[in-house]
View (spheres, rainbow, N blue to C red):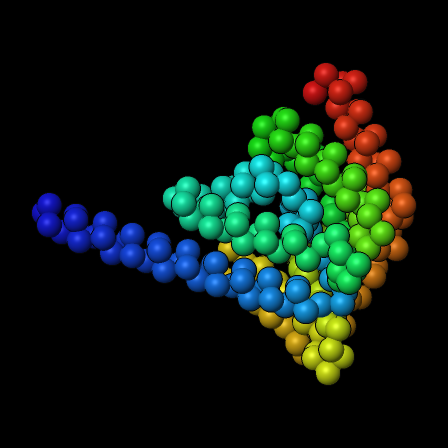
Length: 217
């Protein structure tokens, strides 16, 4: 009985390590695609967009997304996520255009200070010249329209096809079909029309932070 339990635990650990390794590999692939992109458009209904997350917020979000993972595995995923962010802030950086649900900004990932630091960081990043942040109100019904988070990539090399990346808990789906691309672009464009203007993002985030302070929340 003890031998069986030991073998079962060993098999479970082996499957877990393989699953974690696949996750890291998929994220590395996304890193390579983003590095080659001219334009990145993303929609995020649940959390602050990954490319604009602080390290502390990103760790808390990963811990929620991958419960039961060892801390070392979370560290690996966090390292790759932070590496993805290094494409920003350069003269030749891809243009990042994000749509994020207002409810995602209100959702307190991590403790109160982590959440506040994240929103302050997002407000700062929204003022960067090659970054646009638009906040989608609940009335726009973003999750019902989009179905979930996605990233659209257009590449510097126009011979490469546009790609939409749909991240799932255990994999990432890469879509290249014209109909798929058009469908996701249509959703992004509709939400962009109804969302706040990019120049208003910083003020909207600061108002959100101020309202929670005034309410003692």
